[in-house]
Amino acid sequence: MTNIDLNTLSLAELKQLEKNVAKAIASFEDRRKAEARAAAEAVAKEHGFALGDLVDATSSRKRAASAAKYRHPENPDITWSGRGRKPAWIVEGLDAGKSLEDFAI
Image 1 (cartoon, rainbow, N blue to C red):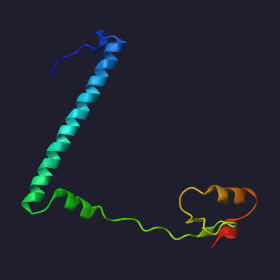
Image 2 (cartoon, helix red, strand yellow; image 1 turned 90 degrees about the vertical axis):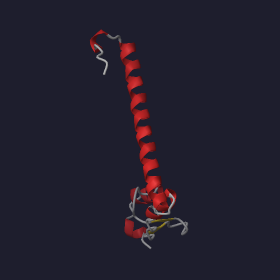
Image 3 (tube, rainbow, N blue to C red; image 1 turned 90 degrees about the horizontal axis):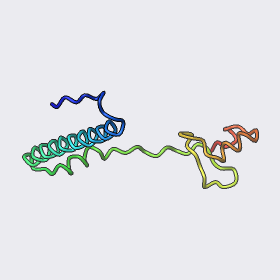
Image 4 (cartoon, rainbow, N blue to C red; image 1 turned 180 degrees about the vertical axis):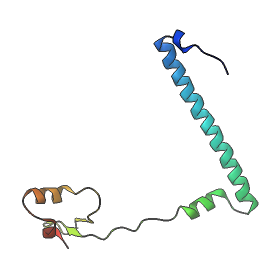
């Protein structure tokens, strides 16, 4: 490894060195991923599968949609499950003095 005296470099040289190191790290990681992918594909092929078939089979688990618990008072097609951020119509209703129970289905 080359010894570089960082104290003698200018700010511009240090920033360029930082960019070069980041590129080298990314390139190294890309090469390692490619090697790992090739090894995984070879093992999958030995067993008679394509790697994509195996990966798709394990990642097919999907979260079921949550049931709606609250309904918009003026438009019943608009609902909210109670998860995540409160929709604007819920926030407006709460600010107007209503409670969540007023929107419950």
